[in-house]
Length: 279
Image (tube, rainbow, N blue to C red; front, side, top):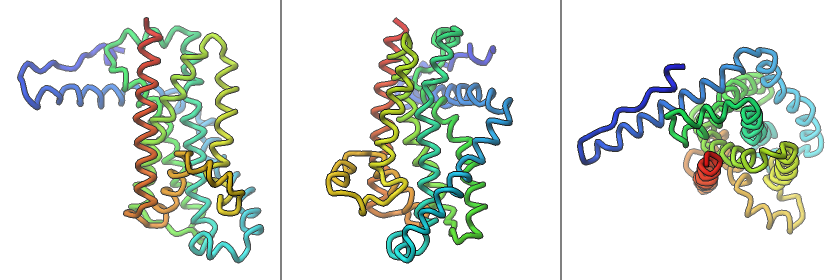
């Protein structure tokens, strides 16, 4: 673990060069944390394979129901294919569940004392949050490749640049959500059951009010009004646009704004919670 004890070189020159070591340190530390978090996942291939297959099971069970319920409306509502609308939503859902449970691993580290050991290392505090959240994006990228490969024969059209931009947006949003999950775990570390109570209470309303599984246009007016305050709704709409090849549109712009705002708020709350927990 000698890598963890390395410190970034401190620049003694003034000017713009002062920020370069800090940037290198953050990138390096984030990589260290991410690979540390990935190591147990790679050692447990069963959970990795199950995580890859689970979205396909959801597509196979929910997708036909969606197609049968909408029928000919799919062409008008979803640009010609239900799958163009539904596949990006499944990827968002996978990222949502993965990053929102980031704090669960932290609760285990509280029990083993691993968190305290991490806090005394020279790793930058933002890297602890960013690295943990980005760890969820690695299996998500693998899931995206598998899902797209399976769904292309069923009429799904792949726009590689848009899909890549969509995954980057999910990573930004995931950093914010993962940081909030981290802060929640710190807040309830003496009552671990509260973490799952809060996470489950919040995640399903967020999903429903994002139009992830069913179009909000068919819902009641009050639900459509509340959804305007849900950042996840803007991310879902943007992902659908990106996976349909739209790289520059107001929908995509709103999605980036929601993702960046979530990341900024999440990191601010998460770092504050982390520093207070170290006192």
